[in-house]
Length: 455
Image 1 (cartoon, rainbow, N blue to C red):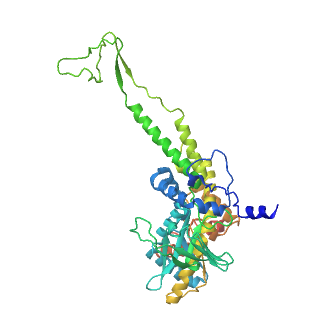
Image 2 (image 1 turned 30 degrees about the horizontal axis):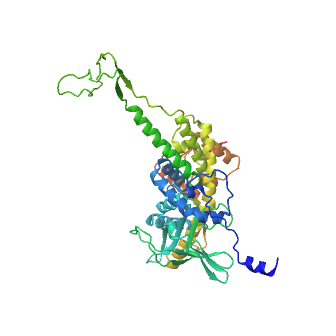
Image 3 (image 1 turned 90 degrees about the vertical axis):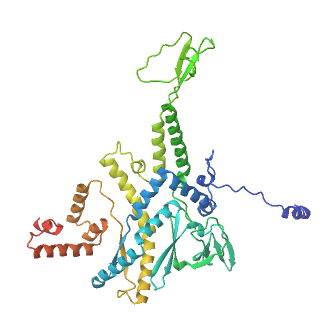
């Protein structure tokens, strides 16, 4: 290639590939052929906002999506986890009581339910750790859209802002830039973003791949099936209405003109009606035909298949999503619930527990600074989530007892599986026995320790 050729071709731009969102929940259509999916982080940033908006619409308008969100929210947090201090027994009771008092005053359980709902619907949830006028911990839940995906900026020296998150030269988040908003705002207006240190922000989202910085709605893979199912159900309901509207048509086969159904002057010859017990004789050349709308064949099976597809995408047992318990027995229900609970526990311990530990540590620190907490600020806590309801209480209780007798689990582990703190349970049992003894009541003979000693 000569010098002139290189000069003319140097500034020729390379062919650019059209930017196409690969998330079908964002594009709103099915691809006829499966296209290549790019880097997870880039694809999520390209379509997260559209997916979030459509997921919110379905969550608040579609009964199936709303039920799915409620099922996942209840399974994740229920009425709220409880904290049990891991440390000195002399101070743990006081510590747990102080945290419970703070949690009740700040509606901690309701806030966690709100966070779980946003985690499912929006794909991410943002909490800011603040302090009130008295120096106590206050949690602020911020909507995902206030951390603007479009806010990207180069800061120099390797630092940058991507999707509202500021990173240092080592690609570690150091701050979050939130756009101020008021509850009364009906339209987005520009306000300078507020920088909040990363140490004061808890950013919850489920990672789907490397380099992912923002969350994706859990409804992403089911937005199109949910929308199609909603249209199908609307069509079936309209079809049922049409079928229930029986219409009759009087046909003049001979085309004679005058209507023989005229019953006198002033009467409408076409005003005919069906009445119970009436027998009418049609004149010669006249006929009556009724509309017979065609029913959609296999509509129930199609709806069931769609529900199973949506349940699989959300990883929820189909009978919970649909509420249809026909054909569900103990074995199938237990198998589905065991898998579902394992999925929920994985999310609880990989996403929620680390966030709860950060809240606990900040609460400990602020209470120590206020001088109202005598316990060790570095004390850790374990979190007990509400126990899921048993499918067969008797069978599950027998299995737990056998594992205790075989030494496979401890009483602490068994009580924790019920969502309680073993120290609190033991204290209540001791109080019950003391009260029974003081009243002269027979001793309780149903504890595990007593049955074990008799054996």
